[in-house]
Image 1: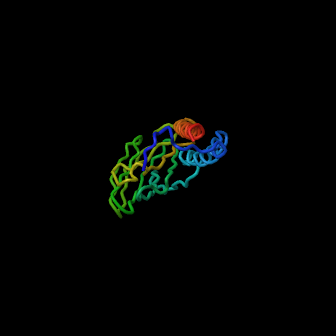
Image 2 (image 1 turned 90 degrees about the horizontal axis):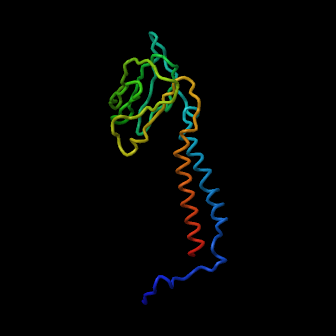
Image 3 (image 1 turned 30 degrees about the vertical axis):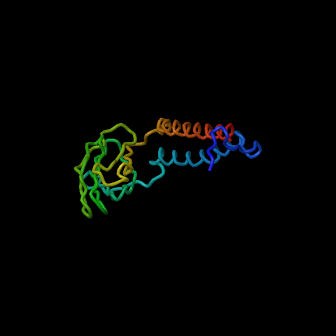
Length: 185
């Protein structure tokens, strides 16, 4: 078997090379719709998911939440500003945590046991706050999140900026790949 220098690699005929315009069009058709769907699912969960109702006892709304590998159900909990709430959380499988940093809530959850948080007042500005697992529970731990929606927050497009930057980077990579393919064969 003889060795050939890199300059002697075979080239595809010009007719079989995809055009840059076609590559960009395919990239736009195949990348942007799924990326937009992912962005919308990530940024707008409070409007898309079911929320917890809860039962009011002695002026405290008790909200029941299930924790499981790797999520909370319901994913979204809506409360009124200044409302006093208590969370009743049950882990269905392994040790988890339940934390809402802005409310000072952080409890450990035991498997198959219900844990009650102290009653806390939602003394927060209207907005969306993260509920997260505070005990490492495996590979999906970082995605074990929910949302606490206080009041009726205005929707913000600021959350789209990281996704837009990622999408722009992906499009640049795809465009570069198409250009290299066009130029180099």
